[in-house]
Length: 389
Image (tube, rainbow, N blue to C red):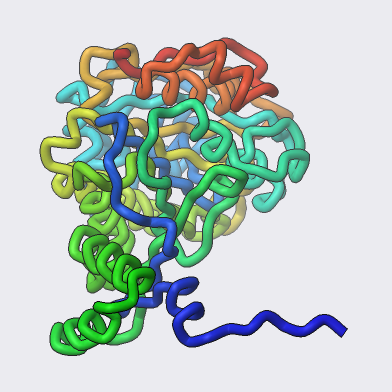
């Protein structure tokens, strides 16, 4: 019989670091970072309708195929022109402003190698960068880390670590707790209690420093903007992490799409705006990528929604875009709506893996071919140039 390991209160605290009303993995220790570039990846779970988020107003088939879905609900206002051929949904007002300022861009008709219609399989491929679901066990962002300058581990602002960050390289997660925050006097007493314990004193001090940066009381469990504010504070600190991952669910709009999607897009717009405000001067060196597992059907279904599709749109934002290929532009080879994938979906013309490879290579000053080879071995096309190097 194997005896269970002996767990003391000291070792339990050292392992869990459940401090001050929020859950923080102990790997998130503050240390000097070797780069001033920041990356925020937002996973849009549920399949965002890229044709509604960034409609191709220059395509004559849009109104014919989409019917009532071609225009947003009146209470949200009119479409916001981005270029002569594309507009933004009115719920993306902040994003449209960044686009006009050269701090946002779009890659349209984009998709992973996946061509079926399972959320779970498609999300796995989105996060692992593979060709088939569950073919790879680690996330593409984790495989990227050995190529980057030394920095504190990337952080997922979520209760569990997403597949995007799983792998051999150290990563961590942070989630504001629903529990009431501990009082300042209690924290001071705990600090005094462990003052003579070298291990716990160090862990406690690091956790308290991180709590001050992240802000433990954002209520982010049900508030995407609160989570974005936490991410911004962590990333803005000179000794904080350089990569953060956020997750937003609720994009599976099979019924009643117009109002539901507008509310989702308004939340996403608030997340991007909150990140810019919270990052402060660090915004100039930041790139945000918001991507989804697949798109939705071009035509509406019988319940005022859309069903699982193929190509969608990826949204880009950040000061690092200024002066680059994506600044204030809609990139990608627009296929038009005359010919549809399987007669129902927007035809994919740009690889998500190529977008991700080009984005991180440009952001961190890496050789695009090296990134493709080491991180996206399955990329079917050369990396897409996104940011100025």
